[in-house]
Image (cartoon, rainbow, N blue to C red):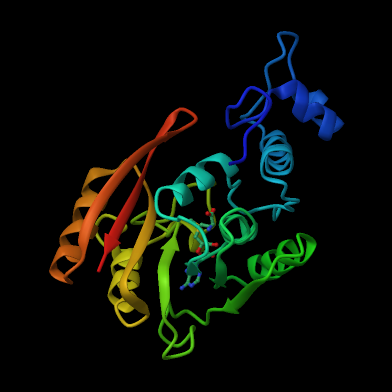
Length: 247
Ligand SMILES: C[S@@+](CC[C@H](N)C(=O)[O-])C[C@H]1O[C@@H](n2cnc3c(N)ncnc32)[C@H](O)[C@@H]1O
């Protein structure tokens, strides 16, 4: 399992600066990093990716600043190693697809809708010499994107989950899930997944600590015949959920 010196997941700021000396300009006299600054966040997360997970990641200038520890903790809630997996919406970093391949030895297919994010993802996969099959979505979620007849042990996603566009933090495609609570994208995913899962397969969704969203996806999942487990975990100061829907 990936760790840093003291056995914990994460990276002291002073060690991050050794990897990316440019970080120095965002550190105050008490050694605290200004994480309100986007460039500082990107550099710090690139340092964690490299030091803790052995991944070299380039971030799109406007994309979500994906945090590696939260993504790894999520994957650990449902991957045991060696599974055939599909990630929907890998984003510009392709970070979860790369971790699934490099750390969990999975056979990975990943999709992305946005043209520029797709190109960044392709380059991140290439840069890390990973065997990840990347598929371009034309707006579809699974149907029409992944060839019919393919079956996976796990289909996972950090889906867009806002009900409406948010200011500044995410691009619209990253953020807007649609529906009353932002559940629409996830509901479509779990419906379509029924045709692409192996018997006993599962869907896993990375979700925020937002009860109405989780309740609405859970309700729909139960109607579709899944049995559902909600694993709550802490990433930094935030609670996150891994919603696991099993056949
Ligand atoms: C919340 S972001 C998550 C990105 C990344 N997986 C992560 O863990 O940070 C959702 C991603 O899904 C992509 N996306 C939105 N609709 C999609 C679709 N229909 N098919 C594939 N990707 C899609 C967005 O462009 C964005 O990159």
